[in-house]
Image (cartoon, rainbow, N blue to C red; front, side):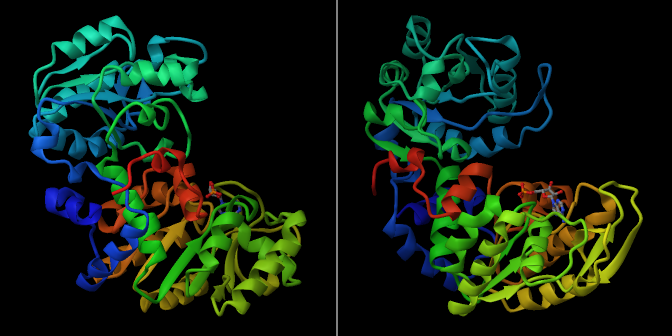
Length: 432
Ligand code: AMP
């Protein structure tokens, strides 16, 4: 069982805030869609084997300096597990969006240096991801050593999932581990194509943890289960809202999309963000929630501003009293208190999308107060999942990332998984 293996193989992967009951409850769900995990492979399976690992090493760079190494650090547990078990570890990743062919500014070289520091062994940087030079480097690798292949997106065949390219990429390895959740929603050569040529093809610890939470816990939650869906527009979250309506007990709406729902209820929302063409949909979603017995929660007061700017004039008003010319940019204190009360009895909470324009201090309190509340709830045994995108940025900005049960590393991939879609990079892996 993948989840058990994850726990058994390293405390670094142990989900925080999961009650014993919740842990015991989760494997049943994981079994439904369980993919074989790297933790299912023993030293016997791995010793001396050439293992191609698709990581997400797409780090932000300032020249050759990595400005945020979160993704590199997150890749370490899977790499270390393979090293410890005597595998020859061949890492692949994309970085940035090279247009046509190799470009120095998109080289993975800085990542090889950072990995060398983190792993405490010299990581060899290959000049390419396919071809004779790579074959020669790989053939001289010792057991337990690590080579990083150059950016797979230096080949346009990668994003086209060209089978010949995938075959060349696979040619230097015996088996495949996919640990790149952020690109798992794309069928590319290095995420899906290579699985046609490598057996077994399994998930890495990072990918497995994303599946355990975003599929496992969400499908089989400890209840009450609340979803907080915020962000800018209803249109970008329709799939998530519809899918979660079938699973949650409470749905809390925040951010810019609040005003489409309020207008659909017949309220005046001034110059707040509204998607006029989604008013009927908003009514339908609220009606669907009522039909399913899901508590549908909108803010009762909001922080309004006379301009979309950091130094606009602001005031707090009831959602019934938004004057013309003013726009809602954050939840008010009464709403935050009400949401905190609604969350207090919950055993599982998933959050996707901020409560307001948190990038501006004047409109950040609604979002940060919810981040604080979730951190506190985690400490009391609630499973808290931050489901990708800007809510992850907000939680990190608040310095609370470590306090949540799970922070998803994939924006688009998290949304697609929460919408109930099949991710090609996951579907292509072996079943357990
Ligand atoms: P999303 O990518 O859909 O999760 O949306 C995130 C963005 O929504 C953030 O950049 C927020 O600034 C923005 N946002 C949140 N609340 C509002 C609001 N009331 N009006 C306009 N934009 C908002």
